[in-house]
Length: 219
Length: 196
Image (tube, rainbow over all chains, first blue to last red):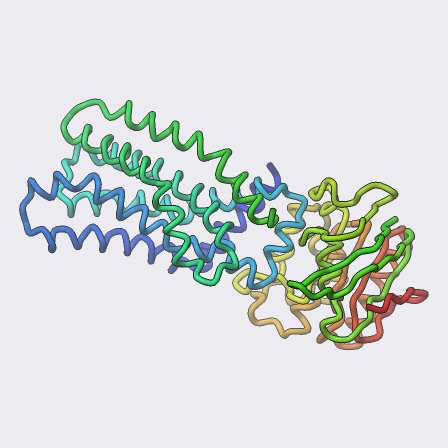
């Protein structure tokens, strides 16, 4: 646990030194959400109808942005070797990296969710649910993303390969996340969908780091 | 303490080295010498458990060293030819991360490599020799039985080589072993030589 916190603390500290990276993901998220009203036209009903899916898709794409540098930057300066030899099991190292990615990228996206939701004319009652759903979905993406980043490390076109690996895995998160926001917007119970998202997170939390750890050790 | 038997390293179809055997007693030192591309760095990565062992055995006190790679990692320090520093973190912050993992006194380690006065500077503004010294400070942080050093003195001035000599002597006096790949003379009295 000490090692986990050390790696997580280092991730946050590094992100604070380069706030531009996290800000870029947030701006990407907001801008993608802003494109929909331009493309679809100012029809409030249609916008509100597509808002849940658009929010989810935009947030996951934004969270993908920093993933290919997650291990790439560490491998380039030799830090990855030191991390692998730090005495931390590789799976725990991957879990710490996933947690770091979520804190650095996922949390700022949550802060920007009300702005994006307003642009998509999502009813205010659903904003809270949207933040919970996006929080869970981005956490799932961070976990699968770490596995993808570990697998594509050193691949020639890793940056392109990574979304192709990770996005199909996050389809269930988009389905249940959008369903939860839709239910909240229609004044129905969003809880079952959020629980399903939680179940997905509980499934990914042990499996993805184990896969990433195995990939990092080159097994 | 550490024993290698018939180690081999393959790069594609070509054998970089094969049939390599050595023993390293506690307090011992082994210098890896050989031309560029002879496989010195590859051997060090192999011994660290960073790449899988294709052939041969690696024994630690008579037991398979790589059976538990996390435990193997915990007893060694590996200094690669890269310094593994984060340019935006200060010298102290770079070292504190490893101190949180391994324990040890950051200030004493910085002092041991003569960087105490530069501790607040971000690693990006350090010269290449100072970066190398900061990487070496990891060795001074907390004891580990086996040091694997890849060209430890590249870019170091004579005073820093002497400081490294002090670290190496203390490590060996405490029963630690050193394996170092180098083209430059190292302060390792009585070291055996292993030609690749």
